[in-house]
Each structure stands twice: as C-alpha cells, then as structure tokens.
Length: 217
Image (cartoon, one colour):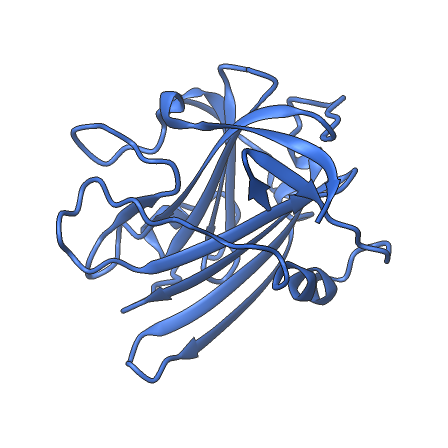
C-alpha cells in the first residue's frame, strides 16, 4: 500500500505466486481512492479504490470498482482498452522523464507502453504483457450497479527499459486512473489530482513521489 508516499513490501511465500493467494492478501491491505474528477463537475462518478504492494520481483495491484455500466470489448494485448471499463497505473522510475503506462480493462486485457510523452511511446511486447497474471470478478449490486475487482501480479521484467531494476528503496513517481472513453457516460478519474483544461493523464507534473519501502505490510 502507499502510506506517506511509501509502497510497502508484501510477503508472499509460494513461488510462483498463485493469483488467488495474492488477491486474498491484497484484501487485507489499506485501500486508497481514485476519486478526483477534475473534468466532470457534479456528475455521478464510479467509486474506485485500489491498493499496491511489491516484493523483489513483482508489483502487486488490486482495483475495486463500482460503476453504472461496464464495457469489455477489447481482448488482444495493446488494444485500446481505455475505451472499455479501464483502470490505469503510470510509473516513472528513478526520476526518469520517461514512464510506463499500464492499462487494463475489467477483464484483464492489458496495454503497456513506455516513453517520454503521450505521443512518443513504445509498446511493450505482447510476450511480456502475457506474463502479467490477473484475476477478475464481476457481480451486480443491489442498487443495480456493477461491482468488479481486478488483481494484477506484474513481474518487474515487464519494465523492459529498466533491465537492472531494483524495487527496494526505489524512488518513483506514480499516478492511478479510472476511465471509460467508450462507455455511455465517459469519465476520467485520477488518484493524484490533475489541473488541465481537458482530460489528460499523460502529465508527469501531476505524478506523486513514492518510495518502495522495505517495511512489510
């Protein structure tokens, strides 16, 4: 989780990690909200929480989403999943100006890129994205909304432009997002607030500084 800008270490005993075990452990981690909606005024927005931890070789993420409608059209790696019900994690390591964007629809289809700006990005190969484990659950709520969870186990080898990456004590800048460009009600939510005249996530000035702490969850 992130506490005072720290991402804490998660002890997961079994190798390789079973996604079911990781998902259960992440349920015990403190959650944070993706609740800033700088472009939406008083519109009703999805409710989105997430948590993040790590170990020597992985970053663990879990998202918890309640929204009025979902869409999961895209099934191929590096498809434009941001048009579906989508959660996103952007990270720049070691003060780099370039950063990774990891985007997943509610069924776990992933899109991962690296670069220094929105229009200068390299796709991470599908073979690496395939190594990201995911588990997703969906159900209807009593209020007629749809609730879904997405657990992700991201090997650090996915960050291919950082082959010597050591996560412990690494200082990074991050932001987390929820979007759905192709939904009946498009929306754009962020964890760390963004000040911009139109929806735009690729603004590193609004990433937040974090440290991968050796402290155990």
